Length: 384
Ligand SMILES: Cc1ncc(COP(=O)(O)O)c(C=O)c1O
Image (tube, rainbow, N blue to C red; front, side, top):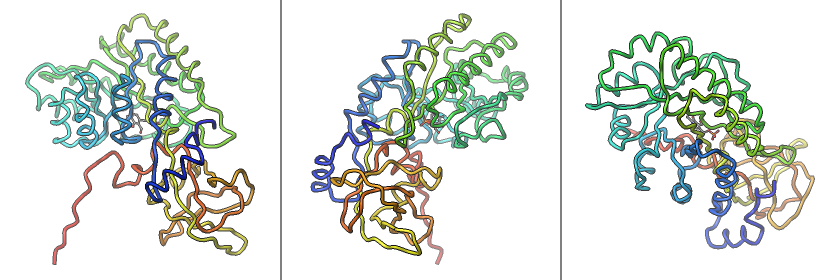
């Protein structure tokens, strides 16, 4: 929990004096620390591609770019944000189950490596290019996955990738492609996983799958993309991911797969961006209703929807008030009983108190659904 509130009480107060509430603040120093803590335990054969969907704030993108990150994009909006960084080609990837033609065109024009989700994706890319184009194939594995939660979807039916059992049929059709060549594998099967051994079990199974595809179908992989899913603690009883164990495990996996001479890719979003973010909001009023003490805040699920989606609150403290054990239900200002940020224990609160929510650097403001993944906001058309 050490860095959850690295922007301490004094800094929170001066941020609020300068910017008013509610607001989000991101610490570049913590983002740097988080990136370095992971980079330093990874083999040089592991590429770190920041998943822009976690938080596309330009400050974060610039910071990670300066530290040598590659980027995983999932929409034209994210591609444009990464394009603005002026990176050399080879440092950007484009994934997503529903890529529109304009998005594919944009990615291909930028020289981005596309993660194809099935034969239709391969064929659509083939029709858009006039020279040999390497892509990665996203596979939805058949092996049992202990994902941690259901955000990515476990091993049941999935909108992502081609089902592993359908890969042979896809490969039989692949020779009809004029320019597109499968040169990489992409499997992403975990979410917010803080247990390095569980992540490594999935990664080991992915390398075994790659080996089967190599041996049975002669596929050669320049890259094997293991996706994101590296977890962070959201509560005092949760331990952080042992990145050293993860790094060592990946090095061992590489050593055990000498047939594979390419690079591994990790695409963490939450791990890199989560800890650097704070959300600051004031208590507007307090209310006791039938035994429940509500603290009603000036922001709610319009700013932080994750507690509603996962049932897990962000860590929160009352700035300048120390620890406390009074139970509060945190409610937002929206006129819906869904507008809850969690049931928490805090010191006795008063109207005007400032609350600081930690670990909100990933899937915070941008997880509000019209913002999520920087997709364009649809116009509203008045037909009078
Ligand atoms: C393809 C892909 N890569 C990376 C990520 C980032 O995951 P995380 O933030 O859990 O590391 C996601 C998240 O949904 C994803 O879909």
